[in-house]
Image 1 (spheres, rainbow, N blue to C red):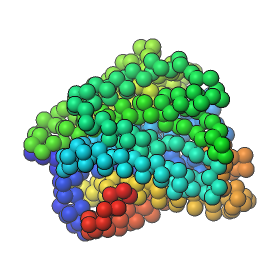
Image 2 (tube, one colour; image 1 turned 45 degrees about the horizontal axis):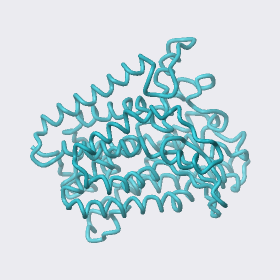
Image 3 (cartoon, helix red, strand yellow; image 1 turned 30 degrees about the horizontal axis):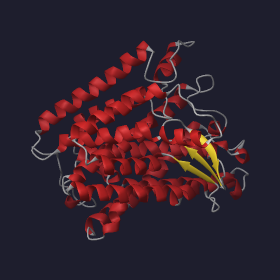
Image 4 (cartoon, helix red, strand yellow; image 1 turned 180 degrees about the vertical axis):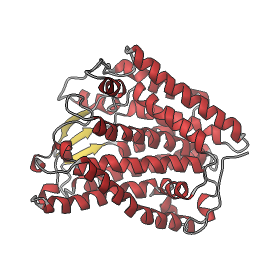
Length: 405
């Protein structure tokens, strides 16, 4: 039995899911919804302008959980991008797949520097270049474009080595203010540097993220035609449990896998938060185990799910780049009105720093319940837009450029 598909009534047509893996699109759609929560928090939560939500000396359990749940987003995006590359490779030769990944990766980097940058900062002068998840996806695809010509086992071993071993590099630090520091930031260490007119912030060093994409590519072999669905589910469940259990065990030992050790806090709840407080920049081994493990369990448990809500969420997962771009513009647009309504100027929502570092917004913001309310509104507005675009892509497969958005 091959990967499941489903027949859907309008507005999601049957052809929308032909030759796609519904559980993968469902997982991608779910993390996209969760992702919007974190970005709404950046633009609306009062405490976002005061401290890091995972700072155990200042945060609350509710705020920590609000931030932590969004940790699933980037690893799942990058991992499934690799999986999608495998599936594209099943329809193309390696040469054609390699060229597609190269062009796709370059396009994503251009988007990060232009359309996405303006969505975040609304600054037409582009003084700040922030290289985050879309940058990591783009550069990862470029590296995968070369790697697909290598033997499958070599790509798998390389992916495991990068994910499991990159924390060995944590003690290495380049001298600040040098090009060596910038180069090292591209590989492993978050860093801000001046490049002529531009301030460049490398938030997603590529070594661990490339490892995640390579593993996602190898993971795609589980969805080859002819693979028994029951066996696949068993393997997914086993791998997910092993990765999640490995996170618990390695984190408990408290020696390797994350640059920050957990400590006993004043109460059991905050001790648990300390245990779960793993590093995202760059993504530590423990961070990736804690997110990708449950993601694989989710794929195992949802392969045959077929409800109305799941079908709508799956539709979001079919148009991730469209959703990503539109949701940032929509959040920023609504935040403009929120700033005006609370005594700030439109110019205060034009940034040359990250939004939560903006000195002009000190005193701006709302309670956490408002963040959740705005988040729900954002997602509800995005649903019909994404459903429309999904239908448009399905009905216009002859338009090659649609595969890039």
